[in-house]
Length: 129
Image 1 (tube, rainbow, N blue to C red):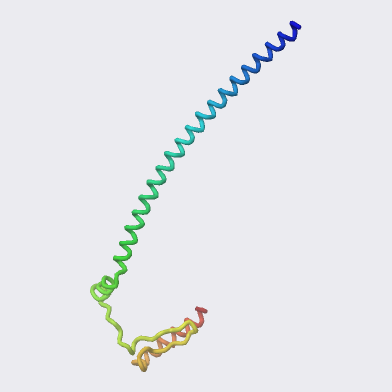
Image 2: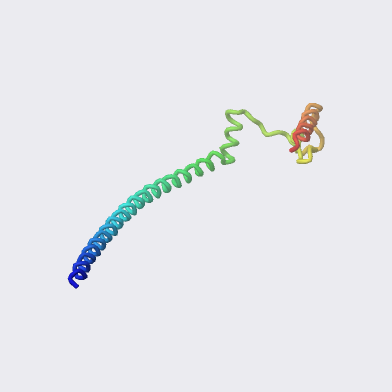
């Protein structure tokens, strides 16, 4: 019987050491996961700030685009530095997606416009657009 008691005491100490090692492993794993969680939270905060800054920049760019695309500004630039003028009704013609065209006015103003319209319609039909 004394051999059995010694064996039980030896098994008990191994069990205690195993439980102690398991607790240590769990504790180390807990510390590691908390550290990893904090690092990920810091990265999340950094990315959130970056996202907010990009959204602000995007809104500013949209406002700038709307300001540049305003009809009054475009007309001002066209008339001023570019010296463009509004075409007469007879100078305007529309090219459809089938390649044919029609003048907005009643008739083309001159033969040059007719030639340009024919060339544009031919190029459109050749390109397959």
